[in-house]
Image 1 (cartoon, helix red, strand yellow):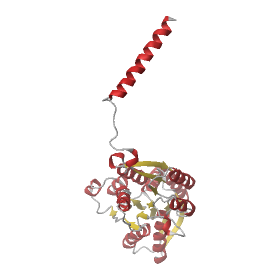
Image 2 (cartoon, helix red, strand yellow):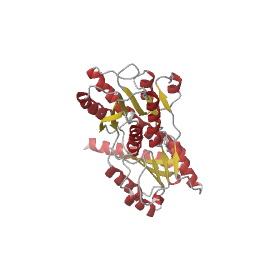
Image 3 (cartoon, one colour):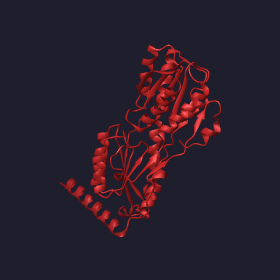
Length: 332
């Protein structure tokens, strides 16, 4: 009984001490610099984390929309599912966020949930991939790359380097079907093939923008085709996977190999492989959209109307001319 009494007294003393410290102001407690009600609340629905590009895009958003900069970011990873993105957007609406940012899985199927956001008075910013909508007033602005132009840039390089080839065998690794990047880069390749009658796409398959799937698909293709002149990969990660598959069967590629590799994104690792001569040509797709989206939000905060479309200026890198300085100058 005495032991229990001692424990009770100790607990009461602890509680009393804590209350005293709270009332008198505990110097060890951190006081928020800014009230949560003063912050701009931003809900961001991201496709997933399927590639180096996507992770760099997420990092850019997280580094931009911080509490120190006056924002509260609600981040949701959709894990490649549109249904998860729609659920996240409805959650943002119910939480009455100030702005919604969407990096869409695919182009179609967004009108109903965008209308819900508009009815709730929440501005909607689309990043990276484009959407198809019957009413463009449902979103405020779009920021991203001209994927069709990227494909055209790759075709210009191919025409320069394979002008004399009358029988060009092409393997096409597509990204996630229905996404803007896949559609634009595929259209670019198709336009080039249509202009050059000696070019032939012998197989076209999707690697879903992932290294694992890129390797799996390429391993299957290598069993079917002994001759491959060009591998057109719609992103770096699929190219990395395809290179692994070729390594395992002794198929050579790159500047000194039998298979010419064209890739997209120009991530840090992708450019290192370009510098090493393993990727012949790499077309940039810049993922650092955080500051660009913030500019749009700040325009609206100041009562101004942002541009409907904001295309990012991008480069392309040839293994024959890329330098270490090109890579070191990049932050992703």
